[in-house]
Image (cartoon, rainbow, N blue to C red; front, side, top):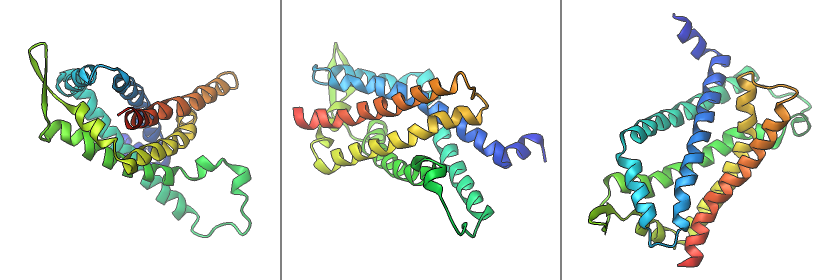
Length: 226
């Protein structure tokens, strides 16, 4: 067995992969939310549709997309493995547990939060990502060039109250997930220091509020403005 296999099959190696894929997905969220803010632009969806075409046709972006898919799969698979390993390590719980005082709620429920986010992700991919790539979308023309009108699909979808509610609630859960995962990833990588850790935690808290809030505001904006 090679040292790579040994590392990846160890608890430390699994946590390392969780941290690296988590940080990569955090970078993805920054790029994704930045591009999606074009939904707020009052131009009938032109900027958003042009952006959507660029994101699905540019070779460099497509490569990053494949890395994102791999990161999601690895993050999910290894989170399941680590959860099972942790449970099997102590099949019988302590007689007296004070988990609420020993660790934050988000830390104890990362698996639950991750599962809810995964369900949301499946709905999101089926509703928009799949349709953009393989769905029968209407076409629009800007400056003599044809574009898939994903904006019309988004605006139609977010006229459904249940879907808007799902997105907002899921973003709340994402915020809780990020609030622990952000600083935890740096700690796993050994990048914690008495000087820098407080700053990392503050940045992580700000990120876990701002990014999910931006994502949640998009369906709300479309629902109330259309």
